[in-house]
Structure formats: structure tokens, C-alpha cells
Image 1: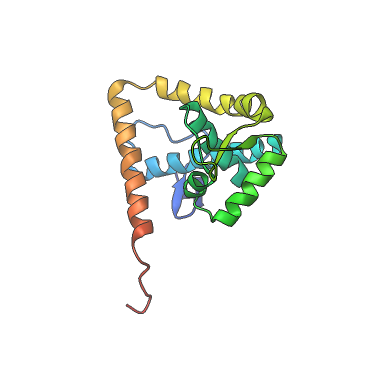
Image 2: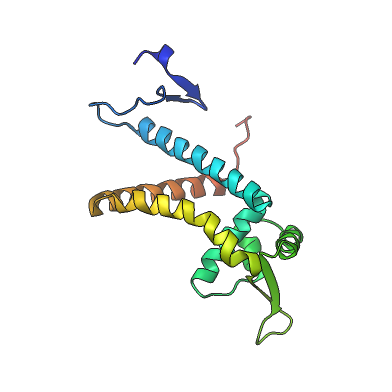
Length: 179
């Protein structure tokens, strides 16, 4: 492939559409390009789901988190949600208010600590929301099910090391440009 045939984005070369599977061994850049392409498609799916459900992407992220908690038969507090989303308690209250008004969640008092609030599924959460995410879940699980156990271990190890690398980068203080 000639460089003029490729697209460039954010410092990486993307092969023209339909290319990229050759007899050559994949490189780290190929992996990063594939990961970036997946993230772009997944971001587009999130936007479409947000539009379909008439909510913004932050609210969609909140619903994703809450659905995973409810799937494990656990309760979620507003504080849990704030930590999961990385937003302030004031912003969390706005998210909860919007989702409650739209019928996706309900607030109820904690059975033991009456001062605390537990978030639970609303009328729209069980059917409309789950059906929207089932499309994505089925596709991702089908792709994962096509891997051998060795490939699954490799991909999992890679993704966990990427997660750690990003977490490490975020936790490091920014260096001054004067240094």
C-alpha cells in the first residue's frame, strides 16, 4: 500500500477501507488502529441509542451502569452512580432527575437507612432500554464467542494492560512544559 492510499488520523495510518488483512504480521499500530475503529463504531452506536431513547450520552452511560448493577441483583445509590460516571453529586442529581422523569429509573428509600436512596428500574428501563442494548450485546458476544480460549486470554490480557496504562497515565501529574 502506498502512503497516498491511506488515511491519517490522530497520528495513526488507517488503511483504505477493505484493506488491512494481508499476509504480513500485524503490528502494534494495526492493533491500535483496530481498537480506534472499534471505539468509533461503538461511539456511533451510543449516539444512535441516545437518540432512540431521547436521552443524552451521560444519561445513557448512567443507564448502562445501572443496568449492569441491576443485572447482578444489586442496588445502586446516587453516590455509586456519581463514582461510576466520574461526575459531581450535583450533576448526578440532574441525571437522576432526567432519567426518573423519562421513566427509566425510580428512587426508593433504603430499607435499613431511611435517609439513603436506592435507584431501581423504572417502567421504561426493563423493556425499551434492554432491547436497545441487546443489539450491541449480541454482536459483541458473538465476536467474543468466535475466539479460541488462547485468543480470549490474549485479548483480555491486552485490554487489561491498556486499561492499566491509561489509568497510570491519568494518575500521573502533568509535567510542566518548562521542565
